[in-house]
Image 1 (tube, one colour):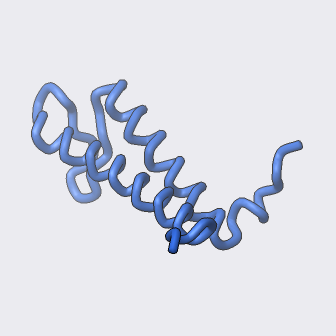
Image 2 (cartoon, rainbow, N blue to C red):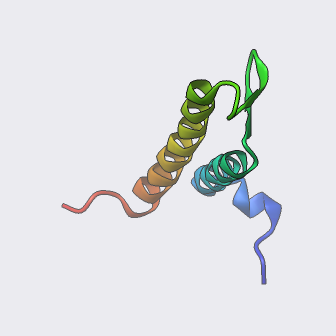
Image 3 (cartoon, rainbow, N blue to C red):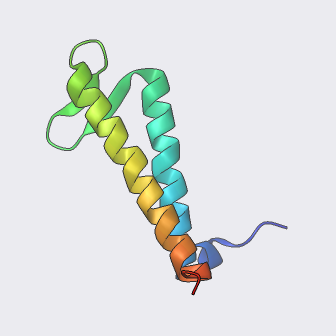
Length: 79
């Protein structure tokens, strides 16, 4: 049985949810060749590859940060 939306948005599950969304967005952007940049709109991999890959990396690293923070909150560091 799938958990409800309210349980996914509670602490610390919200960090896992946001992290998975960010990593999924990075994968979709890398496959489609277009990424949404805040003030510039859509950026294509063909026209501006440096900006494109920088934004894809930012989405991916943001997702890794949120998933890592979730793991830290749930399991903590070993002593």
